[in-house]
Every structure is written in structure tokens, then in C-alpha cells.
Length: 390
Image (tube, rainbow, N blue to C red; front, top):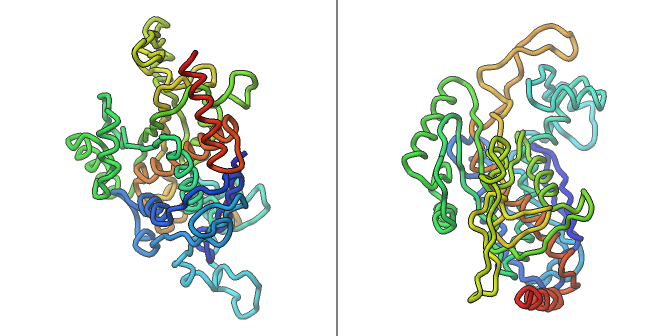
């Protein structure tokens, strides 16, 4: 089983990630991990924090001589902004620091501020927002880089692109090659495959900034070259589509998840939705005429690309503050504002890739087992022969 945990606050000393269950002898590319972290920081509509942080992972356990050793992996990502918060968020209390804390008592509508403060009995949302912040996802992306490296051993690749920002929407089908191309283009402002639609998306972001507002959208994650048979129909918590939906839903500001054409399918007839099956004798493979199921049937991968979409609400920190109630005085006030982005859809796509990769890597490990990459590949090859002979 592949497990991961994260720790750290948005303005604390560092972010941490721990990954357990990786097979031994997996080659680790540190440049690739840092490249993934860099991708997460890109995108049109990001705030000033991205100019401060230059995220890089420091591996301090579980990797030796460039390969995993079968032990838990531990990573650290420095928060450069800690220098500006050291007196506000000290580990040890001191009378000398009195008055230097940066309390937040005007909770932001849509954020975890108020619900979290009530839950933990804080009359200051600082400790809630520090952990609830999407800054935490840097740890997830670093952890998932290991999952992606494992999946690559079996020919599986994962990429994402933006299909909607505000009212600007990409309505056409996309090919895997053009999705790969836009992922490789680090200068692409919103990671949309269509330049004309991307310009309309940029206009939506510009309008939100001018209005002191924020804007959401939709990102699509594609897992390419997935074998048949990951996941199971046998128990509710073994269904891979359910696991993927929970993983993507856990991303900050995601309020909906779609597998394949799930939302469109809900308003269609069965004959318009199901992917018809044929058999390709030359390739000894069953084929589907379309992929509206998003590569999953009955909670099991069917050999088509796995397609997952995340529906991202506009983030909750607005320059044009909304009304709220002071947690101490209970009086009506304007919601607090902290330095923030105003569009994070492309970054959310990278985080979506991370969550999909972590779930799929775990599904691979459950299906093919093995304490080393060599053993896991041997099991995979045996299963591939079984599928060929089916």
C-alpha cells in the first residue's frame, strides 16, 4: 500500500511530505521532482507569494545513491516567507513576542476560517488558515512525483489541461499529443490547448483582477496507457472511480469531480452514453468506440485513458472583501484579506495530476505487488500475458 502524509503551515518553517510503500530500487530524479514543484507555481493570475517561494525538495530519508531503498521517503520544502513570519508564528512562546502575532478574526466566507475556529475553539483563524491553505499542496506534488516515476516504469503518463476559466470554455475534444505539448510549454499562461480560447480565459482572469474578485474553472487530468484491471467492483471502497473522486475532491477549492462524461451522461439516454465494444484481432485487444466512461467501468480500469475533471470554485480570499462577522465582537465587518492569487486553475491541474498519480500508483502496487521494482515488473509482465491470452 502506498501512503503519504503532509505536514507544515503556509508561513511556517517548511512543508514536509512522507511517502511509505514505494518499492526498492526505483530510480529517483530530483530534477523531475523540482520541475513538478515549479509547474505548480506557474499560471496566469497568481499572486506575490510565487515570487517569494522557489520550491525545491530536500530528500532526507528513503533514497540512497539515487534509488529508493524500501524505507519511507521524507521530503522537506523550505518556506522562504518564514523570515517574515518567525515572530508571528514562533514554536515556543515568549513575552518578548507579545503583540507580534497576526490574528485573523474576520473570517472569509467560503474559507475554513470560521468552521475551523469553531471546531478547535480558536477565536483567531490564523492557525486554521495556515494549514487549510493550498500552500500545503506543494507537499502533495512532491510526494506524487515519486508516484509518477513509479507509473512511468509501466508506460503510464499523466498530464492535465484547463478546459474552463470563468465563462470561457473549451468545447472541443482534445488529443493526447496536444495535451502533452501544452504541458511541455511552461510559458503557456493557463495550459489550454486552444490559443483562441486561452485568450478568452485570460480576459476572464483580467476582469476578476480589475474587479478585486477571483475566478474559478475546470481542469482535466488524463492518465494515459493504463492497463485493464486496476481497482475492483467487489467493495465500495475498492472502486477506483470513488477513490479518484475523493482524492481530487480533497484539493482546496474543488467542489465537484467528474469521471469521463459523467455530468453530460446524467442528462442523456443510455444509448447515447455507453461506449460500444469491439475486438481488434490484430492487436488481441477489446476496443471501445468512445471513452465517455472515462476509462472506468464498475470501479475497474478498462484500458482506455482515465479522465478526471475537477470543478474549482473561485478562491475565497477577495480584494473586494465580502461581509462577515467578527469572531470576538460578533459585529458585522469586512472579511480579512491576505496576499493571494485570483486564478489558480492551472496550478490546481498540476495538483490534480498529483492526486490521480498517488491513487493510481497505489492501485498498481495493490494489483502487482512486489518489494522491488524488478519483482513488480515481473508480476506486471505476467499479468500482461494473461490479458493478451484472454
